[in-house]
Length: 256
Image (tube, rainbow, N blue to C red; front, top):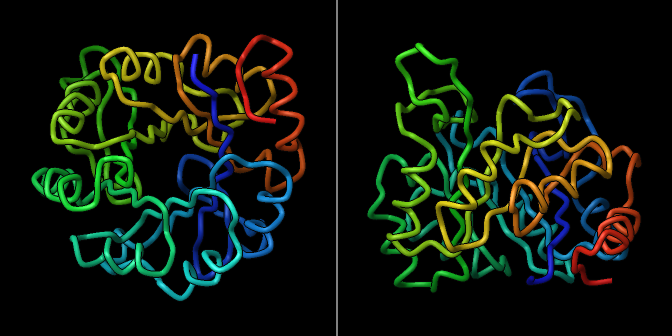
């Protein structure tokens, strides 16, 4: 088994880290620079920074917010939200971002995934997939891709889309269950495992972490290569060190 990564997520709106439930009812959590510095000190393996309203507002990533964090981070740093083309990616790489994460833009133009992987290397490219679970008989895919901060259904089956982006050259998938997001009731293990077993690239589980057991379940049951969480870290319910210690004691390889 490879080392499992523990990744705090900074959902940023109006220059502040926020957190909601199922992508709505956002509440202020903390300053993104302060959060980034703290998580680096505490042993986070990576950080993810998401400009969560960029696509919904039809704008690009706020580079000034990213730059302030990029100047302070000491671990790999991925950014998503509002990345629409190769030029947007290059701007982020030029200010020190390690990876870029695309979601809505990838669905709109799958060829962008291929071009970006060829130009920057697959290890620098993440496709974020936000998903919902539909009821049987709904006429929609059981596991469906949503875009524009979860506001728009696509009709795409999550597993098929994951396989497609892998073929296009992406290096990693960041998978978030909108239904589980912020609920603290656990990751969507069905969705996570379905994607992880369908592709050979790493899948990062996101959405729903509320206690230490959830992190373990995402790895062991969901087959995730990394666990991403927000609320439990931002509000001090679980520390990075606690998470890693808990996983290591149960046989999961983590970097201490």
